[in-house]
Length: 479
Image (tube, rainbow, N blue to C red; front, top):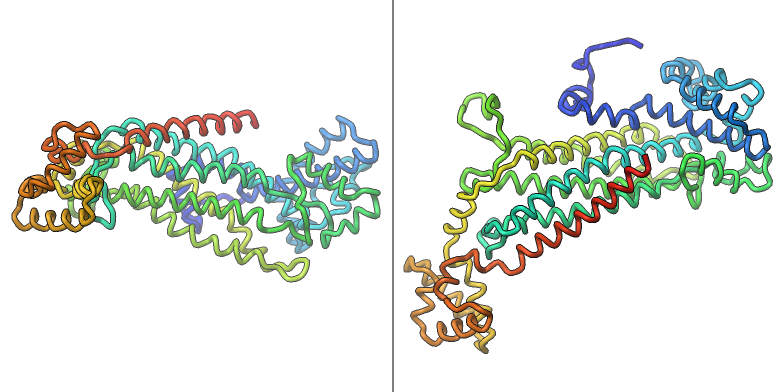
């Protein structure tokens, strides 16, 4: 094969992102490279032959070994050389593979199958293995990092924010628990969808026409052939497998991508100069700006979001690949080849987010400063709720006016509320009923008003830790 510099590659995935993800991409290419695609097609052809031999009582360990060796010898370079003659990729594969199969069973290669039987089945096989052996383990690592943050900072006070404005206090662990929960559900769905990828060996239009000429029960022949690959047949096939199996898997991968991009965006904002609550790791030799030496840009988080912008829209191609005229056309032939790039881009984003979280530090001073800067107005909600629970129908309006007065007079909310003895008495009475003996201390310490955020962070961390351990164990048992 002709060799060239990595920097002569056209796709950024094959030079820039490969450079920063060598180990990950080297693992991925075992499943989604063109070499892997040819290998998986050869595996499907071998499974087909093995099934023929089984149904005709001719299967032996010697022939199984010969077929497995033929798979390994069917190299992409040979297939592509043959395709230059045939102008047909699967016929080229068959012609090459036959050269390495024992002569007495050579006629079984591809017998009863059509091209898309091989292509769609191989595609299901490679996507399933790429997801289960690379993508899911990476996602579990990310989820574990999120769980760590949610648990370690379950008690760390943080001002809440909605619409970019200060809201009621929460904890930093609660902020991370959001992503623990959202991503955890998505991981489980990716797991489920990857196990529902289907294959087919039902012939040219999916009607078992060819295999009906050979076997009394061609449906059972298909089931047995696919079982050798650990796959189930599509419930209904034309010349193609129902495209929704692959589409639904990538819809969930795209959903997870969006969750990770949302996390990256949140973390990027928390690193703004005026917020400064968390910080990405910045190495001693790292440069933030070509002209401003002091800059420490949150570029890793921006990188994750940018990858999402590049790959998320590609889901539209999978939607468009749902449509094929009659039993099949070739309008998804080119577009389908780029699907695996979504996996590569997604994997790179997941790995980058793992790196971000593993090196991220929390600025406790920044968290406390922002909570203090939010002022006592963030406790307007409990004041309203406490007053309303004492039977005051206009509690919301009363407290709203108090907040305006506090702002105008540059006073704390509690100072303004105390000016109305009846209101302050009702609020104090209700606070005592819920176990707060000192109303002044409550309204001067916003971090005391945090609801169940700390406990929820711990509970979600514990739950998803168990779920990820179970999934990780299951994946390891598959190896």
